[in-house]
Image 1 (tube, one colour):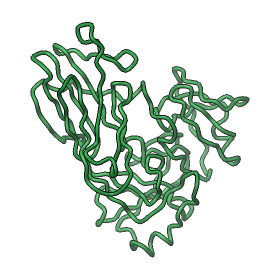
Image 2 (cartoon, helix red, strand yellow):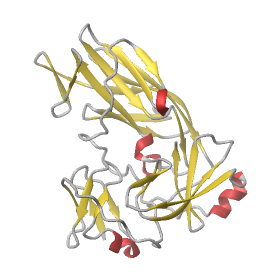
Image 3 (cartoon, one colour):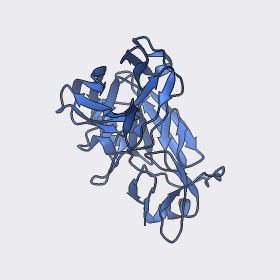
Length: 290
């Protein structure tokens, strides 16, 4: 059984033991976060205004479904919640990094991202193993204090179509893809530091990132998840363990998005500040930079 989101075209196989938790229910798409209903005949997630989702049953074995696999979202991205000031600035309040650059007297480009230090696992396909929230730079273009919305990824600037572009200072560490004018997607490739420049009308906003690799492997399409006993032998016992329960599909606990309901343990290590390792049934199922 497989589901495919008609909003962002994300696809993922659903294990047989997990089918009952998805069929004919409203769930969050792991990538675009659109709540949608899975139809039992086609198992396709159809985007539609959802009702309040029913609480999932307890006691089911959770299985991490990787996020970010396949085509990147070109249209719907998380909207920036606050209007950024027009003067050039950079800040990191409330766990967010925001930067704004003036294009001209009336136009600005602003970016926002969660973290400048992002942990990546041993998996070679990082974008399938790092949560959606850690891999996006949100972009906003404003003119005369009003947000300008793109059409087919292009902005109407006095009748001239202009697009947001991006480039990496070191593509071997992290690549980037412009996503429909509203965001830039990160494509981590190896540990190290690099800058991602978001460009518009000859001006750019530079975002600095450091990708730190941790010696663990998470669930993906090609490998079995790493056993927690193997993790402990590699990096030692966790300094903190927290038992949590996800009551609804897509629910965030400690900011960690769990796509299936169930009981998890969140592990933290002092030598990896900000890293959450999610485990279940003696397996490493995911990591996130909080």
